[in-house]
Length: 389
Image 1 (cartoon, rainbow, N blue to C red):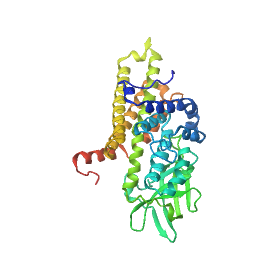
Image 2 (tube, helix red, strand yellow):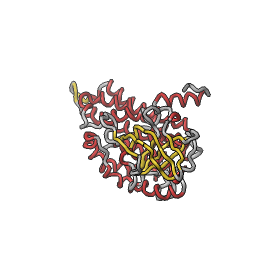
Image 3 (cartoon, rainbow, N blue to C red):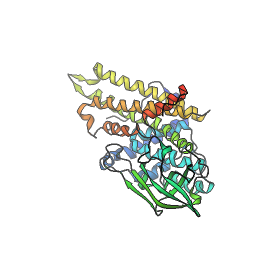
Image 4 (spheres, rainbow, N blue to C red):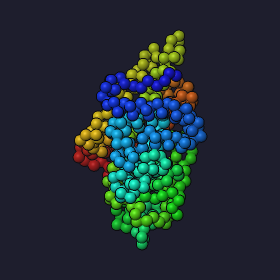
């Protein structure tokens, strides 16, 4: 196949700043040269390429929108383009960076003490430290407010008890941002370091999706942490939900990258695959599929770009982020399925990237809020009526 050429049917390139294009191109080149030659083997083995993390740190992708502590202070659009290019490589790669940035560095930067920021943010930014985000529990996914993990004050510290599940980076993390209820039932954020007595992890195996990503269970059994490890500015469910909004924004862009990869591959394949005496790209039904893809990718690009401009300007509401995550992941999953169809039998082997993206997107459509949950979030916003209960 030819080198990836991108998808820009409406000339959106002209709407990007020089810095945004430069950042995107640097990450695109890194993905092409450093990541794509390795992902096939890691996908088959079910492993994440940890050896590449320092390179990501050098690129400045971790905590890219944050200021100070060595962070790049980029625009939200530039950060979105980073997520797009990482997920064009693999959802597991984007997920690693998204968790590190939006779910670990963001809450420490926003809710943490100065001592917590100085200790963790430079290390997380460089990739010398890895973080994870512990919110989801075995019995509480879409309803995080029902969590049962507890952090009870005991002398000069807190004692944590509970379990978190489906945690990206769990077993490889140096620090976990864990959400738990205190004695009064208030949700707070706690920093739990690797090696703390009573804290253990167990990786989840047998995944057919997100294989090149570490997914773990976190267990806390009378796990004692210092008082200084509580995030002082995080009070109530709104704190972890604000973190999720940051991650969902990155997903809205990342899904575009997965869709672009599938479309580009399917288009090139259709131009060269000959059936009935001509390339299959010359048949009406194949063109219909390709047109659907480029149409929906273009719409998703416009949606993500305007969302990024809102975040960089007056501010984007969480409901607007929900709409973008819901739409763009739906689009990407449908694009991957159409691309798989165009490739025919070849579409199910990992010689081609389509099936890997298709399987990954089955997870992306679920985590950080399912399609149905985001539908209800937007529905409540436009009607004023709560349909959750």
